[in-house]
Image (tube, rainbow, N blue to C red; front, top):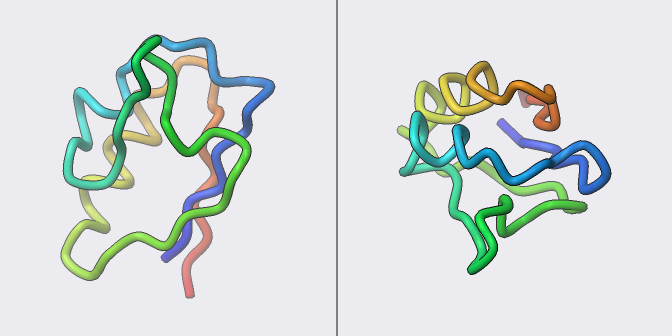
Length: 66
């Protein structure tokens, strides 16, 4: 699974990390640390990635199944 983090949509709510801490991290300003990038979700963190993506009010995270 991969997660595409839209840097333009991420507004720094931090809900992705709050609901999916094993899949997402925040930078010092509260934004997703990987915004503007595509990240590979580590095996076993798929549920956390889904929960974090669903929690994003801006829908800034798009998940792509491998």
